[in-house]
Image (cartoon, rainbow, N blue to C red; front, side, top):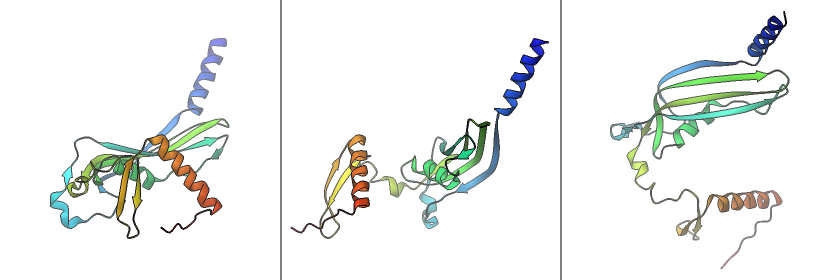
Length: 172
């Protein structure tokens, strides 16, 4: 009798804590970017599939946001330099929840990147994290590569300064 109760408890827990995955959409071509289709003959098909995911967490029963398929699509497209769209792909949604404890919901977009070679020509010159100094006409005066830690420190300092509105105009 004790084995049956244990088995039933495990079965109920498995059903309650299980997740659900749903294939929402298969697509031939999808993009969230402006694509100049007049240059379509020069586009190149990528070699490996890219994936983007947007995820939210559910604490107790309160979601921390809402899942955005466009955000997942943007992440997948921006993972490849010069990518303007995804080909032959699929969109999934996934959900799992342990009642009144924790859960997650996500949207996943995956597909082959469609690459515009004219956008990748200059990709090697631009550092992943960098700081640009512009002259009065908006031309690049100096470009410097910085580390990821320096970038995020600089970014948080700018965000803090913009909330405090402490910008000054410096004339030379």
